[in-house]
Image 1: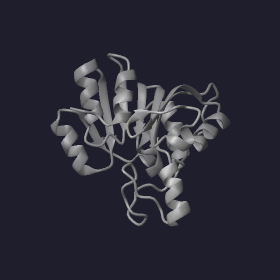
Image 2: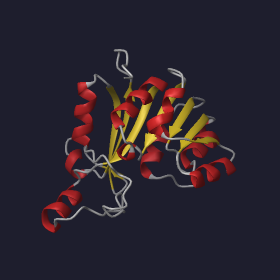
Image 3: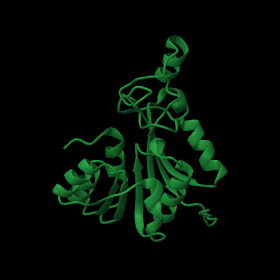
Image 4: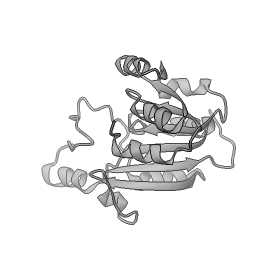
Length: 203
């Protein structure tokens, strides 16, 4: 099974035998790969009941739930990694979801489409319409993406909250692109984060 480019990066960098929570796990493709190839104890949280059924049929431990409301039930530092792939921009309160992510996991992988990619900019500048691309295939009226984030927005967010970036990868058409020009050139970003030293305020 071939994983989506961001999921392949995450799979390559998860330590063997670790404990993982995949939030917004979809049909469980990443979880299955981690279980089969690295002996990972993988758990999943997914909002779509059809995806939950598919993941469970693969023998995966996945429950139906909402990242915006259900992460508070997990204990502090209960996983080696918490993963949020292509889900951040769909959350109602992404800042709170990230706080919970770094409370639950000792490290966190976050991937998202970059809304500052040059094709997105060109669509708005020359066409005057919300972009439709391979990574952003829905029309404005049916897209699940409600918080349009750019790589530079995300970097600023992390700096303001003293969240450590342990590594980052930037992709264009599934291939790596340079970090220096990532906000313009990259369609997709993957960050590996560590929790800040300050305690979290969950209010």
